[in-house]
Every structure is written in structure tokens, then in C-alpha cells.
Amino acid sequence: MDYIVKLAFVLLIFIYTWFFQVQNQEWDIERALLKDANNMAVHDAVQEMNEIERSKGRLIIDPVKAHQTFQNTLELNLGLENDLSPKTGSRLHDSVKIVSFVVLDESSGITFPYLYEDQQYGITKYIQGPCVIAVIESKHPVLISRAKSQEPIRVPAIQEYKFNK
Image (cartoon, rainbow, N blue to C red; front, side, top):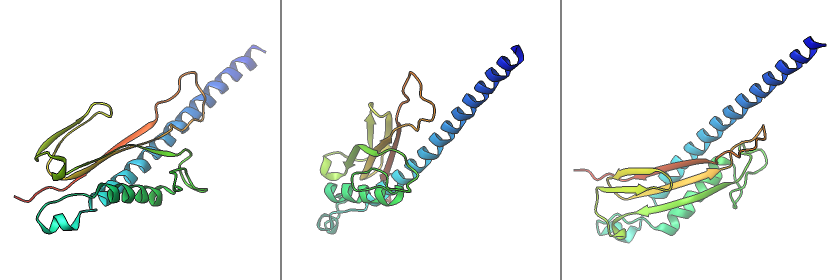
């Protein structure tokens, strides 16, 4: 009987460790998907220039168009609905939130290079030209419920224009 109890205990530890590793792998996969999609979305968003200002030699990003393009690119690359919840068959399990979307350009009243700092999301970067900065997040995948809840998967991305010198 003692052998059976020990074997059951070892089996439970093995199963718990196995699920923990699967959960960590799922976190890695989801984070990579979110990072790639966020990079593509800020790349598309930064291209939404105000053409009238551009003809005058100023690079001004249209913030409304940029945000809409950003969200559309996220939806297409992650398989999301308009409310950023996952479609059936999407690799994601929970909805995605756009927690920060910042457009920095000449209309912002800043000069480049500019040191951008966001303490809340831990972003510090010298910006060389007009840019879009976005942070998205999704819930941490859960296979094993614990007393302590996991932090969400939070992914920043920056895309900027660099002026030729």
C-alpha cells in the first residue's frame, strides 16, 4: 500500500509539472504571436500620413486613420472580431486589449531625436523621427489554476521614421 501511495504522489507531481510546462509553452507561443502582430500593426499605422502636410515637407501621422489601421491589422493577423475577441479557430483564447496607442510627430510639438519614457509600461527609447508606439495585452493562458493569478501578456512595439542625413 505504501508503494501505491508513493507512486500516486510521484504521478501527480509528474502531471502537474507536465501541465505547467505546457502552460509555459502556450505563453511563449501567444506572446510571439502578439509581438509579431503588434510589430506589423504599428508598421502599418505609421504609414497613415497626412498627405497635405507631407506635400509641405512635414511628416504628420493622422492619428484616427493610424489607430483604425492598427486595429484592422491586429484583427487580420490574430484572427479577431471587431471587438478584438478571438474568432472561432483563432490561436488566441482571450480577447486582446489595446492598452496604449501613442502617435509622436511634428504636430506633437516635440523635436527629434526625442527621449520617450513610459514608466507604466517600461518603455524608454530615443525616437529619431515620427512614430507610433503601441502596447497590447491579453490574458495569460491558464491550464493550472493557482491561488495567485498570472500577469497578462503585455507586448510593446515602436515603429518610427528615421530622417536621412
